[in-house]
Image 1: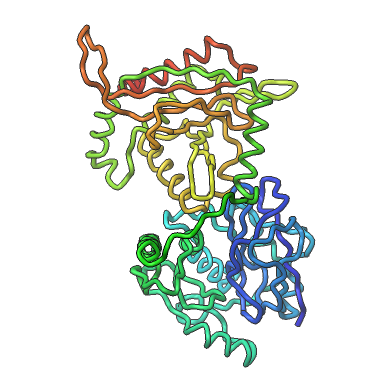
Image 2: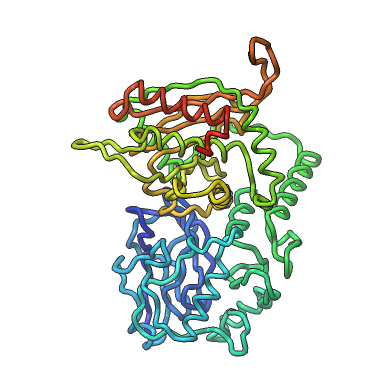
Amino acid sequence: MSEMTFPLPDVGEGLTEAEIVTWHVAAGDTVALNQVICEIETAKSLVELPSPFTGVVSEVLVEVGVTVPVGQPILRVTVDAADADGAPAVGGQHHVAADPQATAAPVDTEETRDVVADTAASVAHENGEAGAVLVGYGTGGAVKSRRRRGGEPLVRSEAASEGSAAAAAQAGATRTPQQGSHAVIPVADSSPVIAKPPIRKLAKDLGVDMTQIIGSGIAGEVLRDDVVRQASQASLFRNLSTPEVAEAREERIPLKGIRKMTAQAMVTSAFEAPHVSVFTDVDATRTMEFVKRLKSSTDFAGVKVSPLLIFAKAMLWAVRRSPEVNATFTDTEIIRHNFVNLGIAAATPRGLVVPNIKDAQDLSLLDLARAIEQLTITARDGRTQPSDMARGTITITNIGVFGMDFGTPILNPGECGIMAMGTIRQKPWVVDGEVRPRMVTTVGGSFDHRIVDGDVISRFVADVASVLEEPALLLD
C-alpha cells in the first residue's frame, strides 16, 4: 500500500486558484479511477474533478469554501503499490485536460474502458454533451477496475475495513439506476439522495435540504423542478410562521470566482479599448413572423427558436460583409480572424459568462439553433468549461429578455465588437406614409475604435438591422 497526494490541477486557461465547492468523498471512502471526487469553482466556471487513483481516501485536506492555489494538495488516497507505480506525479506535473480528446488515456483494457464509459455517463450533462467531462490524468500504469461482472453498472466498492463498512451502512444502501437512466456514482453524502451535481449546487444556493425532497425522476432522482418546488414551499412557510426580523444594515460579499473575473475583465476592457457605440431602431415584424414559421416547421421540431437565433445569424451575415469588426488589437498588429467564434453573453446564477460557438460561420440556421440551445443549457446549469469561453472573436448580448430597450455594452476583452438587442415590443411605426403598429426593437453595439472607424461600424450595424427587418436577406 502507498499513500498518494492529489494536488489541485490546472484545468486549463491559465488557472491559478480555485474554490472547493463540494466534496463527493470523505475519509474512508473507496474511490474508482475517474470517479468525481469534488467540484471546484474557478474564475470562469464550475468544474468536476475526477480521481486519478483507485484506492481509499485517507484524508480530505481542504474544507468546502476554501480557495487554494494550483498545485496545493487537496486530498490523500491510499492505493495499492501497483496503482501507485502508474499514478500521476504530485506538484502539478499532470493536469486535467478540458478536452477529452486531448487527454492521455489510461491503459486501454476492457476493464478500464468500462470504467471510463461509466464515469462519463455519470457526469454527463442533461444536454448530453460529452465535451465537458473531465477524464484521465495521464496515468501510465495498470489500473484496477471496480466494475462488476455481468454488465452491472459501476457502484461503490465494498468497504476496506469494518469502520468504512459501518459508514457505508449508515449512509444507506447504494441505489442502482434503472436501465436508460443516467448512471449515478454514489458519493460520500450523509443521505442516499440521487441528484446530479448541478442540482446539488442549485439546492445549496437555495438553502434546500435535499434529504427532505422526494425525487420525481427515475429511481427517485431529484430533478430541478423538485428543488425549486421545495424552495418555494419553504419560503411560503417562513413567511406564514416566522415574524419579521430586522435586516442587517449592510452585507459583505467576498469578491471571488466569476464576479472577481468579470470585474477585472470589465475594468481592463473599459480603460484599455476606446469604446464607440452606435445603435438604431428596427422594424422586426418580419423577424417575428419568421420565428413563428420556424417554430411550426418539422425541421425545427424540439429545437428552441427565438429572435436571438435570427440576431445571431444576422451578425454572421454582417461579419462576412464587414470582416474588420471580427478582429483583435495588439501592441504591434491587428489580427483579423477569418472565422467567427460567436460569443453569447449568458446571465447565470453564478454571474455573467460568455461562452462562444466555435466556427459559427459554418453552421446552418438549424445547427446554429441547436448550438445556442446547448450553450444556454450548459451555462444555466453552471457547467460551462473554460475552453468554451476561450478564443471568442465577437459577442452578442440580448438585454431584451430583461425588458430593456437598449444599453451600451462593454467589449469582451480581446474582441473588437459586441452587439446588443433590446426587447421587441409593439410600437407605432410609419409604413408607406401611414402610422401602423409594428414589432420594433433597438439594435447596436460597442466597438474598439483603435481597429474600426465610424463608417465600418455604421455599415455593420445597418447590415444587422437590415436582416432583422427582412430575414430573406439570409438567402443571399
